[in-house]
Amino acid sequence: MAHDTSTHHHHDEHAGHDEHDMASTRMAVSATLHCLTGCAIGEIVGLMIGTALGLSTLSTIGIAVGLAFLFGYTLSTMPLLRAGAAVGTALSIVLAADTLSILTMEVVDNVVMALIPGAMEAGLVNPVFWVSMPIALAVAFFAALPVNKWLLSRGKGHALTHEFHGAAAQRPWVPDLATPVLITAIAAFLVGGLVVSIADELGGSSEGSHAVGEAVPAKV
Image (cartoon, rainbow, N blue to C red; front, side, top):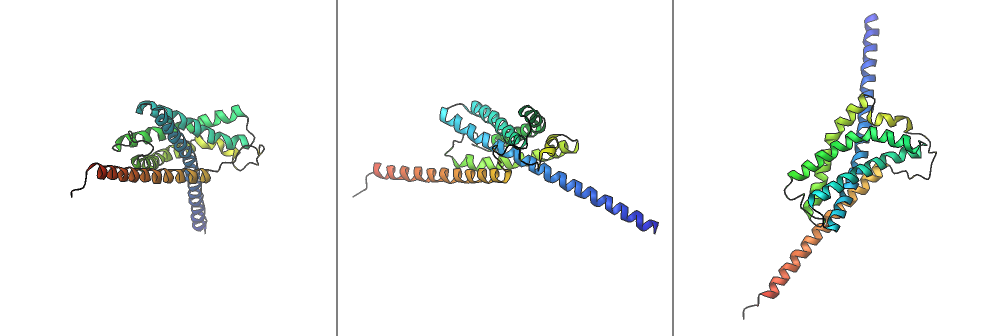
């Protein structure tokens, strides 16, 4: 009987550990997706600005990384502000929670983009960019996920924001931008960019073929 009680107690501890681990993993995935959304927005906007201004690749990367941090911090701050946290408190929590995660993403993302031939030089209307970006972001996600899980295990990272999750909105005027909605918007934007760039490539090829046809007179 004592053996059965001990076995049952051990089973309960094991089950509790598994549930805690699953909850930690879910929180880490949510935190990583949140950072990923901000990084994606920042990088795409940064590329647009760099392309529009005709800046060098290095300058464009600098702007994209800066905006990735800006949007990442902003998206993480808004739920805290909505829950009633003071601006200074929200910013200090987010800086402590997201900096390492965003930094990991940006380093990995840019390394992957640099390794893909032509990705760094590709413009907004080049399909190479729109194919490379999701690949780089996916690799960055899996690189940052264990970082966020490690931070959570130490009571840091998004564990610092835990007390604000699920809290009633004390500032309903602050937009409630759920991560799934943001990710869907980013995915739609990436797909739309790919479609537009492919259409531009096909249009350019068609015009080029037409111009060649006009330049070479037909034989009689």
